[in-house]
Image (cartoon, rainbow, N blue to C red; front, side):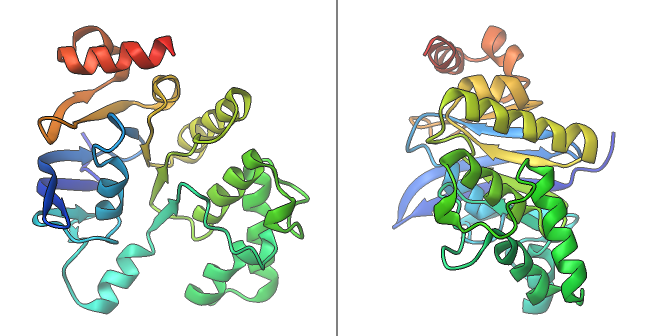
Length: 249
């Protein structure tokens, strides 16, 4: 088996002194889609922010490619964090910039690519998510589904080793949510992307995830990790109940 891309060991998460999750131990394998699931308020998005280094754990460690995500020389940490592509729940596009400029901004800041190459790559990423011809559009001109895809294109701008998606399907109608699922599968199957995805949408998790990590809001720790269909039929009872309830919704 290949070496894990990311390793999480004995991670403890607190917010305002309150324990959110403890004793988190799991790996992210190259080329997989790992879904983080659980009831609202269990700490899914908070865990995602810890994985990318935006928040520091109360205890434990997150390693990416053998390097600690939270500790080390500032220059090394900055270079490490650039290997992540993050799609935030609200999209977080710059409203005053066109889609092209949104995608080219990180390229201009963190690479030595010339203007023509930045534009070429931005157009390619937009085409990849089904937004060919959207280079000059402003975020306000986009539908909800288009904004999600534009945010995903920007997360891909620096060709990251690890893509992290925070509730990618939230706020979308079933058709657009399914299209986004297809896009995630395309990234994994055809580009070999490694994806960590926070989601409350059980149907989406079943459609795209190789494995699901269940965070329990009562035990305040992970209580299951495995393929979604396996957890649905043979996981702990609270996990099966959560997955059945979501599948029936």
